Image (cartoon, rainbow, N blue to C red; front, side, top):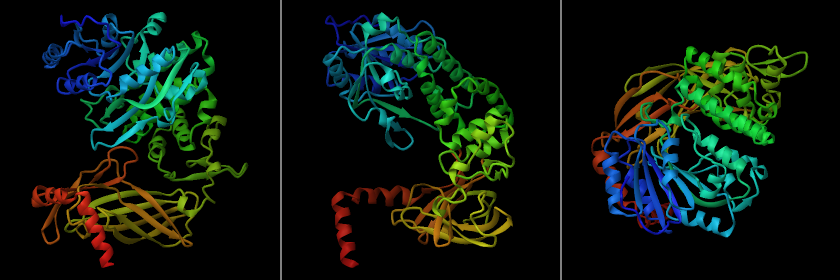
Length: 561
């Protein structure tokens, strides 16, 4: 630990935990040092890094007397020990936590400290801005929970806050943590969830503010070796850790007299924690899925039935298929989550008039309840909202820059009359749409097949070219109504790439057809400018694309109409 210590007591201690992150640590610390409330202490708590983190941290401490460097004697493998060791030396009456790959917005300390000084709070919390590192897109984490300023006398006043389980979005009164001996559980992952659940339940009063107090950088598709713990969902140990923490939370709720929160907490687990795994299930093999079910099902069987009833039907279907061990069906159902993709087939029960997911009427009462799709009105809903399923069954390189696709459309509610159907494949790189008509022919009731050649060289790109990803959609018309649906690709196939000389060679691009690799697994087409398009044309047009130039272009276009 650095020896330079300020003599005055700081108002707030911000602990920055770090492990082998020398590159991003200065950014995190700088975000604390530039806070509008300057009377702070920064404790860099290093979990025994083996890269240049120690050197960087000591230099940061030498530059500013508010910075203290603490190095653990050995690596703990988690976030809890670095935070707890920092708590032992923190000098301020109020405490915050920051990860080395994230930042604090400039007014975070000011805003949260003001809430504490207005009332005697156990903690104050605010909005979290999530920033996608793969594109810079910004969103607010759980925006409905932090939309307005409010003070609550206990978590029972709004159990939905259990969804906001981040320890880093909060400023804690040191007296509150010490009074309850509340520390981060060591030796487990997902420690935030247990710590935050305990804080919610133990707090008598806390305030929510709508201002942003944390900037969370998210890399959702990082390589498995560099992914954060929460993004290592491909590891069965990750599943075990998450379930283990849930059991610890359940025990705490029971022991602390908060059993009334159990259904809300179970709903949070199903809607958030399980849902994170569910989107990945199509990409897992049978062995992994079987092990996943062995870990997950015993815990799912302990959850409150009311928590299942609050979920959308598509999520209940996936959960039930996992509980029933129907692992091949799990993959099919999980590809439709959040996208209104139909099952391949539904089965009506002549005895009760209900319609069920899959190829048979479920045998158990629980399965019939969870797999019942009757409420979705699949056979009567407006055609634009009909549930259809479009799958690519074959994909091959065609002549030139084209790809040949075999498409199968499932219509489980029999919305389309028997016979040949005209279909259109739409793709829009930039603003101009590429439209490719083709024919779907009936195979059997509820199933159609067709072939389409997609010539990517015929796409009309903007003058400056196009850089980005697009997903083709399939459009059908019936009785004057239009239905547009996404197209599911094979989950894995070798990417097909070609260099296409758009505009007679003046606008070359490398175009790649590939599987999406996550979420439902759509067919994905990627454009990347190359040659002069990338090095000269696009940079020049970006420099010219000032607000004034855009206004002049719009004015000229309006005159020429």
